Image (cartoon, rainbow, N blue to C red; front, side, top):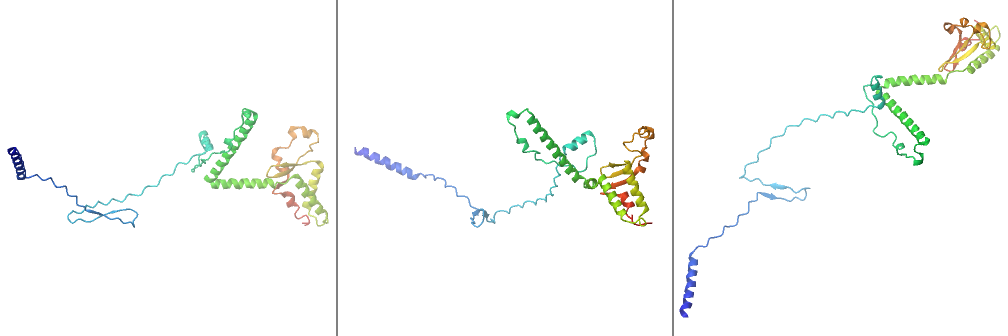
Length: 287
């Protein structure tokens, strides 16, 4: 028993001695942390956090980027082509008239935004009420398109528009001041009453003769009135309209058109009959 115990102790000691004699390989050291070349600075006064790098004397300087050449300025965008009006397209398709240099512009907004939303009840569809409403709706669209085209033409050719406006204004002014036959009779009676108040020695023979000629024509029914719109004329005929003589019925004895200017006794324009005014201005001057 004692020998067995000794053997065990001897074996243990031999094992410990053998373990102490061998070198235990050391474990590799842990890798060193990389050297920090950058120091992070937190500047709270700036809106963004930025990283500031220190210049390392061992590191070569960073190469500088080449300077970018200046870019040329962008060319202006070409103007968008303007749309032509419908009437101009139709006129050009039919070959009527040349198009102006400046094209008209159509509004992108719908012409009738409110009328297009109107819906008739089912009982009115297909009846005369719906047809009547469609007629006036289309009529309004046509007139509105016409006014838009007129405004475009005025903007394209202002000189031509000025000429047309002046001409139309002149025609309207002449038409509003066109004298009538009642104005002629009033002038005749007024001047005749003034001439009566003047003695015969002071009366103008030309004025008195013209007044007597007009009175004779009225008494015989030979003077007539004709309205020309912007002017009026008073002319005489050879026979009364109620006269049924052979001379008034025969076509070969009728006055010709070339003799018509000789039968004009007065012309009225701008609110005045000028022949009677000129011949009776100095009715009280005997020359």
